[in-house]
View 1: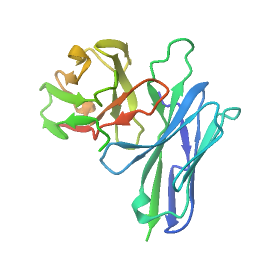
View 2 (view 1 turned 135 degrees about the vertical axis):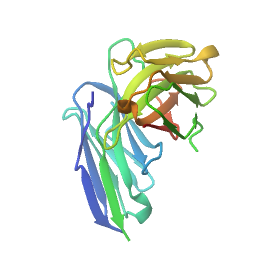
View 3 (view 1 turned 90 degrees about the vertical axis):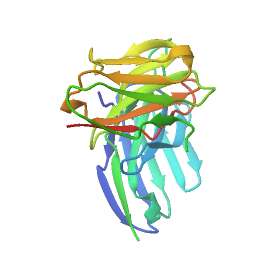
View 4 (view 1 turned 120 degrees about the horizontal axis):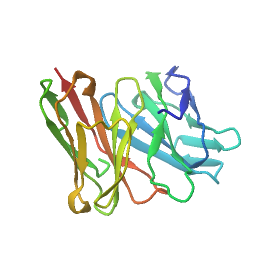
Length: 115
Length: 113
């Protein structure tokens, strides 16, 4: 089952603009990860944010996490055509004592950056 | 290159045939996961290994699916008597523990004709 809901489903912007993608989830989590996927390829890990963290940065990426609202956002600043891809959030559910570390994904946001 | 290797990258098979995919995880990762992704959807969990032990299986994993991880190293996923509905991307991931990043392979795209 899909836990996360990404919003928007599709986003089209011009190069140089910022892109913001949102993710909502349903259960208590240990951490949340963001991935990028180019068409027909595997997933590339972007950022992991733990449940006790509120914000994390990596280069042009900024991720926020609000556990009270069960939501996260991914901001890509100064976007480039090469950022065109699908972006997924994935949650590690806090299942009590045993956490197997399986990830639950949303349906993703398709980002298109026009040169 | 994430360090997780999957083979083959593409597989076309006739309905009713058996197929087997292989995943080589990052060597120090004792946790290995298989996921399935259909067009326009996010990946869905299939099964999980900790070392050689298969500790969790999804309801998506029908009796026609079997996975192994002998000696806790590489893993194989076999689908018997393939059906058109099995057409999907099969992704493998490994991680050190549930508090660190999961790294994915490039996937095996299965097409059943």
